Length: 388
Ligand SMILES: C[S@@+](CC[C@H](N)C(=O)[O-])C[C@H]1O[C@@H](n2cnc3c(N)ncnc32)[C@H](O)[C@@H]1O
Image 1: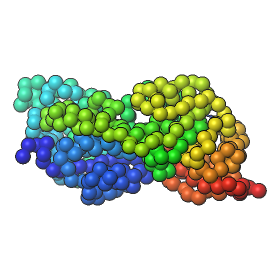
Image 2 (image 1 turned 180 degrees about the vertical axis):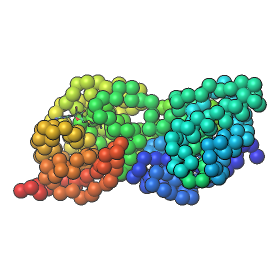
Image 3 (image 1 turned 90 degrees about the vertical axis):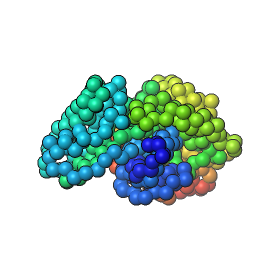
Image 4 (image 1 turned 135 degrees about the horizontal axis):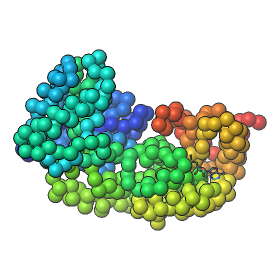
């Protein structure tokens, strides 16, 4: 059995509150989830499975491939234990190494010291066995090692994603307060959207929600947009298997007709950025863009999903203005979207009350550290305002 066929317990991480969506994605790919925690899941798989997860997952941050796990009482012991591992079988001296640590142990106060010790142990080992040491630094893109040190237990992983999978590579122009791509994908998945009904996204900003919707509707794996992953820097990297996997993934197409996707924003710079980003993502032909006030959005006659991510307002004064905007969103839903399902993604429930319509579901998320909700409104004809 080659090392890429050996099964290990792969850990897939995600942002808090996304784990249910991640678990479903992993199961839809045909895997059995062994265990799930607040920020990730574990499943048995090979290095090829790790590559496949990197290619297909929309809601994951990192796919971690285990290297070792051991008891450890001090930074010196960490050096000793990890210097004894065969790093020369994993990393070439020509690669660039980064170490990321998460430390919760009384023996060490600063995670950076743990990273430094581990980095020294790896480069010293590679230097002594191969004659040269790899460059090391904070870039976290190529060969990335994760250390979790909890109490007296250390777990070491190779991060096969390298850079977080949230960085899809299409958002060249981020705009104001953009949503992280994994969160946007999750919000779209939470609406049940599959491309069969129209999707309207007023206040689109840099276009993340509309672009993720287009990727979901077309069935396009987000990993096709990236050319660099951590696993490519591992000595066991099977380039032929990866190229074959990409070729197969490119053939995936949604067989049904994809209903229109419409993205609008009042800011011409946002529309320009959203168009550029959609072009980079290869989905510009699937999205119609328009520059207008959200209330002027030309909602298509066929019923579908309308989703907005308005600003939440963090400064005094801003909120007064935003109260009017949220109330206008309620009016827009009521007047222009009867028969549709409306969604508002917000981190401000006081402002959300101003929408004045009955919420049928509250789905919990975090945006960075902000407690957020994706609020659902069933906009049947004659939906009543709750504030009357
Ligand atoms: C929080 S941002 C949306 C970010 C977006 N989800 C993304 O990922 O980039 C809110 C957007 O609403 C837009 N906006 C604010 N007031 C608006 C209005 N009255 N009509 C249309 N768009 C508006 C802003 O220009 C901004 O792009």
